[in-house]
Length: 117
Length: 113
Image (cartoon, rainbow over the protein chains, first blue to last red):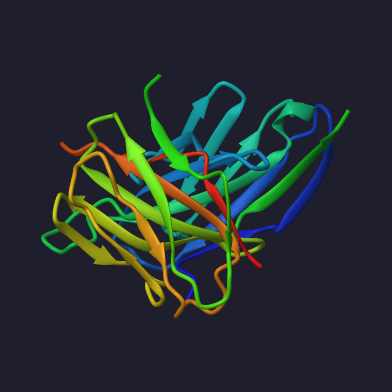
């Protein structure tokens, strides 16, 4: 059962476009939502993250929009560049509790983004 | 150079053979994780460890084993019971004290001969 559903699977945009990647979840115990960027043959790296007490977070050209009531969040890349071509993963973390789930993430299946020059 | 080291970069396994993937970190992070990545499947958690000498199964632990004898090291053994081991394996770490970010190593690609 996929805890975090991500779409689309792939996305192609022209340079300067604004690709949008969407994620949805059901578990209301999730309280931390990071996005990771991965280049071919490399490990993922944290891009930006948000908590559910805010509806939007910006870091440079990357913005997360968060809709708590709809249990959805999305990544927007402003003025996309060919160097942004990578695979993007959304993830979610359950609220830390006394159980052994502390720190584990549930990942979406990834979106392969291609930005044409 | 600090960070997370995974070795080897490529690993070949013969049928019926156990192989061990290395993950070492000098970040002094408490938690360590192993993920498996297959095309179109995202990252799936195999095992994770919050402290030395303690670890928990993730979502796809069958056919894998781990140990956490030192804080710096979290090796993953792919046993012969794992019938479809070909994948990209990623190790990650996270600091304690409420820190949230997981940091990933460069990965090991395992191929079956």
